[in-house]
Structure formats: structure tokens, C-alpha cells
Length: 136
Image 1 (tube, helix red, strand yellow):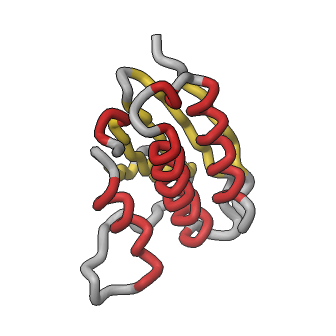
Image 2 (tube, one colour):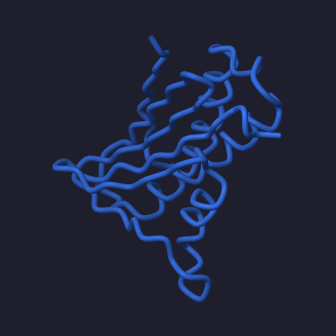
Image 3 (cartoon, rainbow, N blue to C red):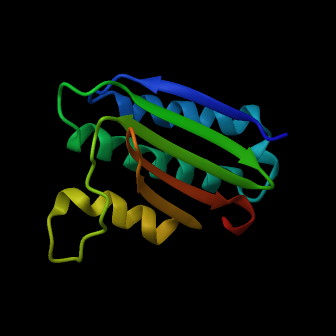
């Protein structure tokens, strides 16, 4: 059984930093430091998680509820996702000449092993996966 943990983040400018702390603590608690280069995995995971949360904070309506962050680590793979209820976040990856505010998704697309975005019946879900064995 893989370890999974959920966190509710209040939408604020502090949320990305809090999310980075959660992912670092989660990786340490689940033995991710034993796989590949622990420092690189921690840095990359924290960066991509921060980008997910920043995207939610910047693009959701100010009257929207909290961001849910879910982390899972199994088979040397970190899965991180955020979801917001009743929110239709922008989920397209822009071309380089398009708006700068969407670069976070382009970073996720270029660094993550896999990633995705969905409109759900309740809102929006964004996720990425990192294969710890590929981090060097």
C-alpha cells in the first residue's frame, strides 16, 4: 500500500511555501531520500509542487475555497496533485510568446515525468509525477 497524505491549503501568498514544506516532509517521512539523489528529488518536487499551488492561487477567484494538495509516493514515483472545487483554472500550456503568468505549467510540462490537468464535475485538478530513479 502506498503512503498518501492530503493537506488543505488556505489560498494565500504563503500557500506555495507551505506546500513546499509539506512535500519535503512527506518525502523524508516516506523514505524517498533512499532513492536516487535525495537533494535533487527534494528540490524538483518542491519546485513543481510550488508551481501547481501558485497557479491555483493566482488564477482562482478570491472567493474560492481552499486548495487541496494530495501527495503519494509508491514504486519510486512521487504523485502530487491539487484540486479546487468550483474553479475552472486555466489548464492549457501556452506557447512562448503568450502570457508570462502561465509559465509555471510549462515548467511542469518540461520537468515532470508525467503530468495532466482535468476539469472535474467539481472544479479543476492538476497533477504531476516524478520518477525518483530518473532524477540525477
